[in-house]
Amino acid sequence: MEFEDYECLPTNNVVTHMLAGAAAGVMEHCVMYPLDSIKTRMQSLRPSPGGRYTSIPDAFCKMVRHEGALRPVRGMSAVVVGAGPAHALYFSCYEKLKRTISGTEHGTHSPVSQGLAGCLATVMHDSIMNPAEVVKQRMQMYNSQFKRCTECFLYVWQNEGVHAFYRSYTTQLSMNIPFQCVHFVTYEFMQVVTNKQRTYDPMAHMVSGGVAGAFAAAVTTPLDVCKTLLNTQETSLLKTTHQPQISGLINAATTVYSCCGIKGYFRGLHARVLFQMPGTAISWSVYEFFKANLYRRTPRESEFGSAASIDTAVASVSIGRSGTIRTN
Image (cartoon, rainbow, N blue to C red):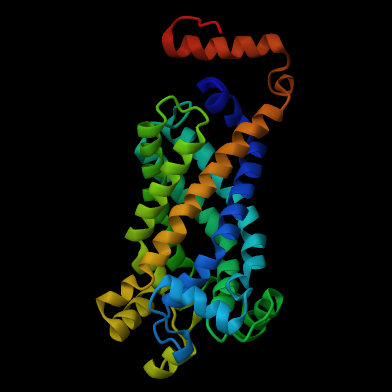
């Protein structure tokens, strides 16, 4: 697929970006969910004796051995429900905004526009995803009282109110905005390095996504620890610190420091990086795959009216870039 076909023609098709984004989000969260469960447990500041782990393999083996083979995936339905619409909005907003802000046709070679587009897309994404995160993380915790997502959702709704689903929203944004800025800018930079022609290249998309996810995850781990604490409201920790609840980023950050010191901010670092690296690699690979293949299946006449108008459109793009008409 030529550069014009891959990067230019599908950009006006919002449905393509939304469908590709939804597929990417669901695939990413489902495939990596067991590791996400381990990350949540390893970030616990006051784990129960049975919930203390020395490593990622140790955590996985203990979960399966003592709690059943399906325990690492309990709560997955929450992220399936949330990730589809959240990522559909996320990717479609990013694709549109990076071009609008940069004022260019493709939004490449403009880290500022990519970063700003990532920030705005993240605000939209987290507004949908945050309630799913609350339900998911409460079900992931050791000795969780909840067996089903609906049970957890109704309990939080009835006992803590709607605001409980957004208690960590500002912290989530404080984490995800820098995460996504670093993520998108690194991804676009890696694409320049590994895929200069910006064609559909599965290996380049996978490598770029993996590097971007790992780097962004490592940088923002301290904020993720605070977010986990706000979402889970660990009962044992609340009793130890004599707090009725933990509210807000500052309260969470000071609680983490008083409990575990500086090292507390990096609990679960390895699990987070190992979760995000393949997760973002999968997400970008699936997104770019669906973006390319949905475009191939879209009748070109529906976008340009006829085969002749396609040639005219491609010729116009070529004229704008080089001043000459190229023929295939």
